[in-house]
Amino acid sequence: MALCPFPDKPVQILVSSLTDDADAPILFIENAATFESMASGRMEMARGFILVYASGYRAAARRLRTPRGSSVYFAPRVFDKSAALPGGFPIWLYSASQDRPIHFWGDLDFAGMDILKELRALFPEAKAWKPGYEALLDLLVAGESHAPDEAKKSGQNDPGQTGCCYADEVLLPALRKHRRFVDQESL
Image (cartoon, rainbow, N blue to C red; front, side, top):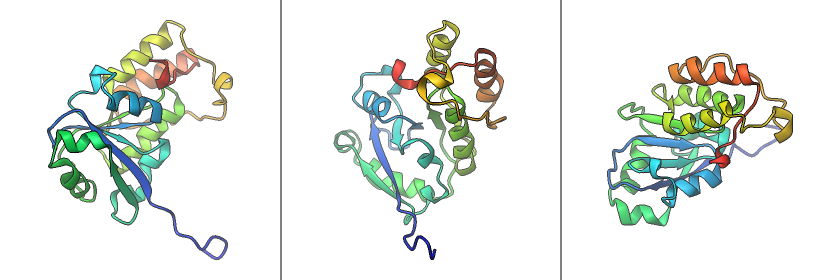
């Protein structure tokens, strides 16, 4: 505190939705460009989800689930879709509730898997989002990927296990086998 007297600033969370169901499953998205594509309806597989962007590792910050630790912002289209979402989402977020499915979709790389692992500390029910990761996995297997050093990702460390069966049994073994990564923006 003496060296840096400023407290951690709140994590800014951007929420959008293509559903009118205020209790829909939550999908945390690592990348801003991908979030915007999904929120604008350009990716059909996002329908039926409440979309949350919190910028990579910030989504897993321990302070995320506290009113002083995060600030929630809603995309304008949310108000057209669901009158209940703007009031209900913060109530859910700041509770210890584990009453709905939580998914995470990030880059298919070790950092993405590590974010999932850290997110599971806040949301033990969080899982890798299969529709998104299957599309990235197809690209990885087809060789449409990049070496870690080609995208300044050579410093990433294998997280070991995430606690998500799909990530631990399918995604991480594929990353270890191919030694290449695929970014969300490639879709």
